[in-house]
Structure formats: C-alpha cells, structure tokens
Amino acid sequence: MDSSAAAIAAQGLIRLGNWIAQHGSSKTKRSAGRYRQAGLTIAKTLFQKPYLSTDPKHQGLILHSIYHRPNGWDHVAKGQKVPNGESSMWGDYHARELALLIQREAEQSTYPTFFGCLG
Image 1 (cartoon, rainbow, N blue to C red):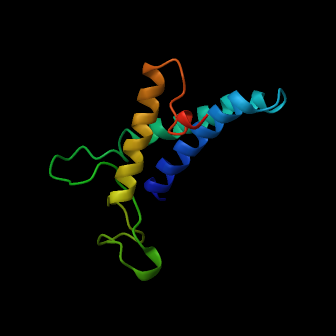
Image 2: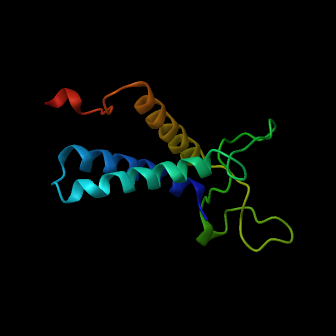
C-alpha cells in the first residue's frame, strides 16, 4: 500500500475523465464519468482515517507512504511485517494537489488547466 501513489493516481483519473469528457469521441465520452468517480473515490478514502494524519504531533498529512522499500529505508514497527504510518514529502504534495484540483473544480464551472493560455 502506498498512499502517495494513490494521490497521484487519483489526480490522473480525474484529469483523464475531464479530458475525455471534453475531447473524446461520443463512444469514449461515456467512460469519462467512471474515471472521475474512481479518482474522487480514492480522494474520499485518502482524506479520512486511517490515511489522513490527525495527530497534531505528526509532521505529515497523509499516512502510509512508502519511501524506498527495496533498500529497507522505511520504518517497520515492532510486530509488523510491512512499513506503515509514515508520510513522505511527495505524498503530501500530491495529496494537496488533489485537494486543490477538487476544490477548484467545485468553485468554478470550467476545468482549470495550466495550459489553457497556450491556445
């Protein structure tokens, strides 16, 4: 399990659904809502326990991120077999990007893009 990968995937699914809705063929446009809904479902899971850190002493936002499992750099708590409970800078970054994407879509009637000014 890697919450940072889930945050990245959720953004991708929402953005893919939006792109298909705007640019897809009539046949593919039917799938746009499913991609968006999958991304929103992942977001709903990430932004609540056990993935959202609620401990004011913890320095991260999203828990259960993996740093580098093959090199054994992730902390494995006593009695556990796999790492858990950690945050990563990129996981928190992508979780914030996901939250901003959802918030901006809710506030605007148009889908925000960074490339809109390129024509």
